[in-house]
Picture 1 (cartoon, one colour):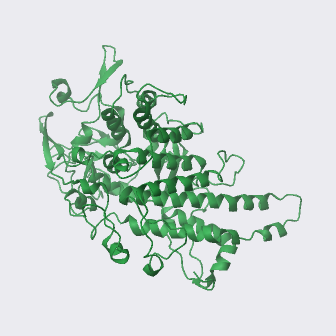
Picture 2 (tube, helix red, strand yellow):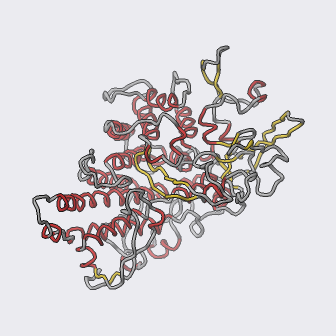
Picture 3 (cartoon, helix red, strand yellow):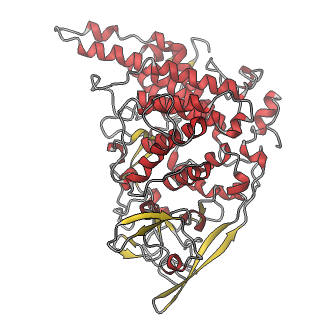
Length: 562
């Protein structure tokens, strides 16, 4: 980019990032006529450039309906983007998950900062000091340093978002203009292994800049990148890299490396499981000791308008409805005569005790995730039986017999358009423990800790279960790991990617999804599991196709099968 090139505008996505402390993530449009030199020499402008880079992070709630592109859910709206995945009509010409351009735009934004970061001038702050207190200057000096670490992390995050979709992608060290193919069309894709190592290297560089303890830096706002976030991203990259899909495509990452990186997050001793699982999805979740890195949305209500049961006036009836497939995953608690929990077993419709009262004594995460027939929601008993207040054949009623509870704030009044704070979790400690359990199990088995980390795979997964008072497991296998991840982390943008990295799309995503049909006869319910729809999944769908528009520019080899 020539020095005299003018910046006329910035992409403004600041409304998607929100700080309840200050406006440090509120992106502002810069005035026209700001040169690159002036932009990056001005301390205020540089900060805005970094905050703008945050705005390219994944918009978690806007993609919540993509859970319906897994076996966990179905969206009521027939034309939802998830349906394109489910019927197999997505391809290199039509992919509703248009992450390619967004992430490369974020990478360019990061590269612009990294190329020009040394131009920032804070001498004017020192010149204004009229007393012996130099705090303002030293804070600015540290902030300039930390912004480099933040940007390195964000660039790594954008690359991870690309790699988990496309495999190997081109690596840009310069701020090439994505919209000008002449600046980058000769750049070649790197291998998957090279990309994984590059992401890890960016995380290592960021971790050397952002200190583990930010306590002395009281001006460093909550929501900005932390050492915990950096280590979590590195660990997740290695977890994916050690998984079957990645190993089969050239990754040299080992499960032992992933386990070590996950232990590095745990060893910070900065995070712990929230005593109340439901707290993770409520209006005050950013205060949870479990949250590592998150995105604030402020006071909004779109999720509630979409997902409130239709008995409530003004509900859009666009619910992201859990399937019977997911509901069946929640175990049944066994109790003695005194009501004490003695164990748990898989739910089974063929078990008369289970089928008589299918929603009683279930894993507590069930009620925190799913609104079911007979559940109380906003002091209203929800009826999803045929003819019930929120059941078929009412227009826009759930197709599955269930509504979503997780993330949905029941305090909101749709009629009066009230709102509540929402925040999407990118990394939380419960996920770290499950990742650790999976990596340790595959590296060393269920009960071994040869590196002396202080926790085995079985112990880690049981910590997650015991948080919700589920009985501890006595043995562990891959199927149990897969089950526990889905029960704990459904509707958190995990399932879509987990099943792919395990290479089990043919097991989970090709299987028909089911609904529950409920008949009410004088207050007595009869339940029937019915097939809702068949879905399409082929092995080539483990990776996204490179957009054909990019193939036309670069003549790269397309991903296999597309």
